[in-house]
Length: 248
Image (cartoon, rainbow, N blue to C red):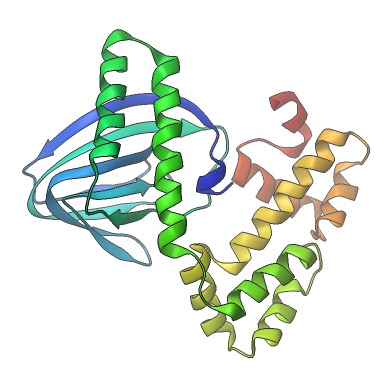
């Protein structure tokens, strides 16, 4: 599931956070976080990237991403902490803004609703915040490389085929490494993650139909091994394929 498709389960808090700490590490978190930096700045270092969240940056911190923080200036952040039914594939990101009043207004309303115990209103405001954040993310990261657009279109048609990625790379005339770098720059995910996501989403549809066995679905979606399919499905959704329809 990508950030644009998130299905929120619970909101665990609307938080105004002040810190004068210099360094800390965030690991094994239960919540996703979206928010805005009101003051200060801090370097966030992930496994394979790093970025500075500074004043007027809006951000998404994926629950799956562990990171360390080095504070440059005492920081103040305003954020919503939440869980989702399915794991989110989109990696953590931040985007600097010039004007951020609209996002602050949403968070202030959510904070008020938290104080009155209106969980439904908080959830609605979370979706509004995320929708506006996604609009800005798409505008900032909208693909400009025609080779990657063509590659994604090819993958969207052939993701169930075993050699889908190999053919997409060969058509791009790029090395595997450069193809992976450009794909991630354009779509904020790796080619393999994207293909896996497409396969699992298709598998969900087939499971709901009730017309196929799990083994047939695994094979149809491009998995040669039913056990590997079940492992990947549960890893991405938190639920075994055999239990998926009970989850809906």
